[in-house]
Amino acid sequence: MGKFHGEVSAVTVATTGGFDARCLDEVVPAAAEDQGFSGTVRVTRRGEPVYTGAFGMASRRWGVPNTVDTAFRVASVSKTFTAVAVLQLVERGLVRLDDPLVDFVRDHMPALDPRVTVRHALTMTSGIGDWFEEGSDDWEAEWAALTASHPLHLLRGDRDYVPLFAGKPPHFPPGERHLYNGAGYILLGLLVESVTGRPSTEVVADEVFARAGMTSAGFPALDEPGPGVAEGYLTAADGPSPYRTNHYATTPHAAADGGATCSAADLTAFAHALRHGRLLGEELTSLALTPQVDEREERVRGYRWMYGFGLTHLLDAEGTVVRWGHTGEEDGASARLYHYPWHDLDVAVLGNVSWCAGAMGWALHDAVVGA
Image (cartoon, rainbow, N blue to C red):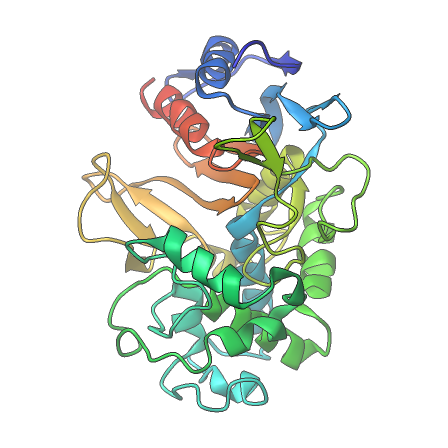
């Protein structure tokens, strides 16, 4: 892939729980070079940066490099923001976790099983059919079929997704198990709108982004380019360029299950604000950060994987949470937000090429927990 345009800065030195941030001066650039990473990396300890770096191009068309301040689409990391917005309504007494979800979305999905609760949607245990079955054995074929039958530009808000899943049969009874599900978060967005009278994106912007100090965060559409936002790219199998933009490959507008735009500093600010009670009170903060259900039966990389309220938790053999956070993937956007409690570290990895953040996230993980 050659050399990368961008910048790397080890801001301070921190040694916590055996981790020395100076190692990131070698780990991150080496991983970026090896993986063809295009994006930004930010690691903070107690809210202060210990590493920031930027690699690759924000705009290949105009030759604009990514910087540490560039904003990126974060895909399904947006689900975490929606979960917090719902928990804020719970805290205000406007919603209860075990309320039937249909009570809030009857105008949009009257046939929703009344046994499906708000809690089920948050923890992805509702069993309802999804607008796009990400858990499919051949999700690429599923996506191709969806985009062939339903133009993506018509998906402009939460309610536009409902016809894609309202008539699908459930996968299992509510509460039986976890299955990754975006439709539940679409319905949670409609719950937020039903209770507040405002679109879920507006509520998240005011009640999550603003309160967390996420100054670059927002919900710009792909066809409404703004300053400082990276263009998204897919790798091309053929053609004159190895890349093509994602303008025709992903949903152009944000919804409650994905599509927010953030800088790496926004994501680490969010993680810090969440666990320090700036978004929720003590009781709901504790609940938000508590694992709820197993994501999968088998251990992966030696960890037990559990899902909570918009967060994935990795537990070690003793049942201790080693990491919590969320991932985000869509064509032209790749994101990771992680918090490591033992090390008091927040990690944000944002990329503007499909699937590019995953390997970088694991390189950082191994550097942190392997210390």
